[in-house]
Amino acid sequence: MKIPFVNMFSQRAMGLSLCGNDLIITTIWKKLIAYSHETVKIKDFLLKDVLQLKHAFLPKEKFVGDIILSVPREFSIVREIEYPHSNLKELRDALAYQLDSFIPFSNEDVYFDIHSLSHNRQNARVLIVAMKKAELDNILSRLQAIDIIPSRVIITPFAFLPVLGEKKGFVVVVSKNGRNYGYHLFENNHLVLSSVIKTEAELTNQIKTNLPDEILLANVSDDILLNESKIPVQSLDEYVESYGAALYGLSECPCNLSLISSSKKRLNAQTVLMFFFIGFLICFAFLIPYIQKVNNLAVLETINAQMKAIKKDVSVVEKLQERIAVLDKTVGNINEVKGSYIPRIDVILELAKDLPDNAWAKAVTIIDNTFEVEGDAVSSTNLIPILENSSLFSGVGLASPVTKTQSGREKFRIKGRIQRE
Image (cartoon, rainbow, N blue to C red; front, top):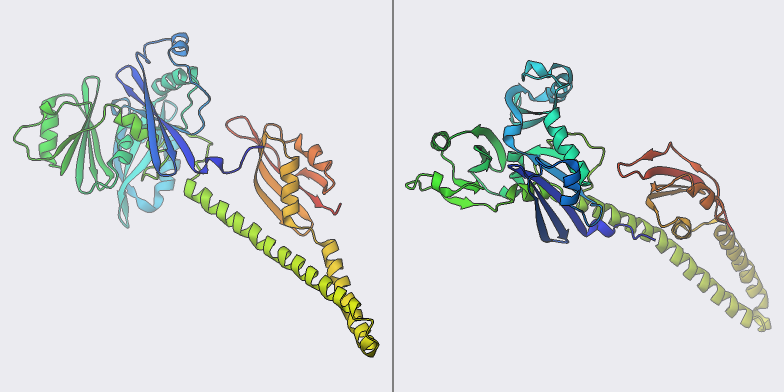
């Protein structure tokens, strides 16, 4: 049987980025608060055919975790607009059929999403980010050939957000992909500006126009900067973009951008941990009254035995008989309550015993003599006869239609009645 919450203390995520025609794959593992990572490069990823890619990368096992793809800034179309902050949802809905009013492409030709850069009470600065479907589909189909399916697609500047951490002030990240430079300006870990620059002279002028507090270089030599500049400069790791993309799967970053939609919902580890402890406290709250009741019954049985031992004393036999009658009635009432009470822990133990190893119970609700269990399994319909054969359950059936997860498993809600053996 699989142990619930086993992934709560161990998480992993995968970040993907393109460097020229090469694909960079960085996998990050997080165990409690310790991080470790591994990076693999697939050379000429965009040039090889599908058959060559299958031989170029053979995953050890099916990856379980968030997979974030960061595509180069120059592959995307980015437009900044101002829009009423209270109507951002209306903007997203309107772009579904009026995208060509803002960029020279219709929504049938591109994948797109919006990101709020900043806002006040009235207006918001919004980025419209789009990428041609033909280009992104080409990348996604190649990834699918090596059994990698991204759950989220972002563009280069957003991959640097987790790397910047808590840096304050204005920070410029200069990246390079192919012949072009990427100029990305951040203020207090929020993206302010992102542009594609073709020459070193234009890049130098751009930096002079908005002097930052620090400059970070990604795959760029510091020779392009002026020697007399007193701005602190730091060179980042060669694979910082894929590393930053992977961090999105393990951290909370101020960006919800994704050019593709995914049905997979990300679970925050702290939230899962909180629900685990709440569930534990609820179970413990039911367990304490049960233990107290058992102790009370033991005390009553002890008193009853002592009373029977002193019945030989004739002088108090009548009083003892009256007390015994009262105590017997009390014990009978307690036994009656005990006969109709079904401990919650018995129901949970029965579910743990009956459910097969390929089924996960994520939530159990017990009200009076009914129960409802929610989770996922390889085949949820096979669970009904299994639970129906239990001596503790009856009237077992589906509480809602069966749906499938992205991994092909069936999500179920099953309810039934609880009966005494």
